[in-house]
Length: 74
Image 1 (cartoon, rainbow, N blue to C red):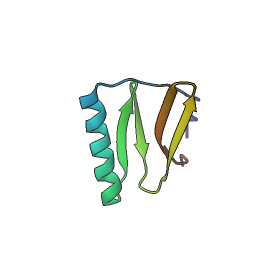
Image 2 (image 1 turned 180 degrees about the vertical axis):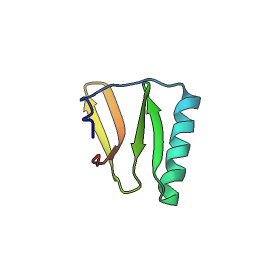
Image 3 (image 1 turned 120 degrees about the horizontal axis):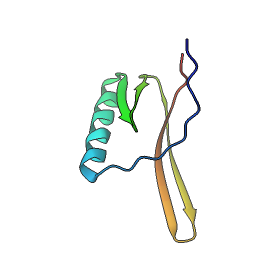
């Protein structure tokens, strides 16, 4: 299997696009199904058995909330 290159990007979306992606993800999580999403021109396959966590960061006046999904590629 071809090894994937390391990648660390942030992609901004409109409110509507972001809400749509979250809805599709929530539906997949609730139904116990895998999920496919495209981020910055790369299609990602997220298996049903992933680890979820929520991260909060604060630095000065800036705050950040991240909903994270973690999995290992086969």
